[in-house]
Amino acid sequence: MEEFLRYVIRELVEFPDEVAIAKTEISQRIIFQVVMRQSDLGRIIGRGGHTVEALRRLLNAAASKRGIRASLQILE
Image 1 (cartoon, one colour):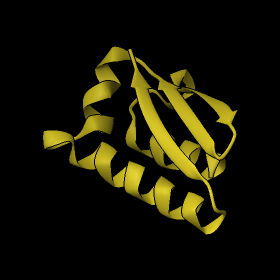
Image 2 (spheres, one colour):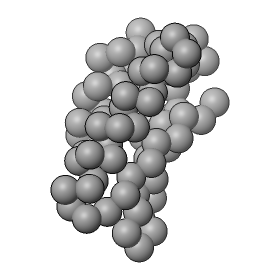
Image 3 (cartoon, one colour):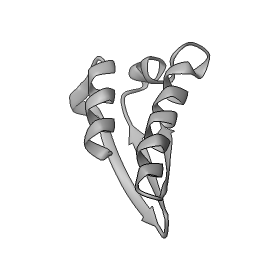
Image 4 (cartoon, one colour):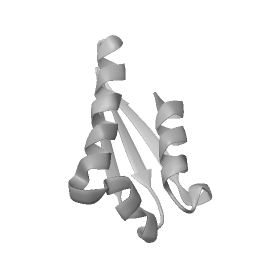
C-alpha cells in the first residue's frame, strides 16, 4: 500500500523529491501522513477534494482486503 501511495503522489506533484510519507500502525489501522511542498497541496487535494478522497477510497479498498483500515492525512 505504501509503495502504491508513494507512486501515485509522486506522479501528481510538481516536486516529487520533497514528498515525505510516514506510516503509523495502530492495532488494525494504518495511518499514512504525507508532507509536501505547499505549492503541491492543491494537486493532491484536487478540486473540491475529489483527488484526495479517491486516494483514500483506494487505500481503504486495499486495506480491507487485508482486514485492516487505512487513513490518509495531508500535513502542511
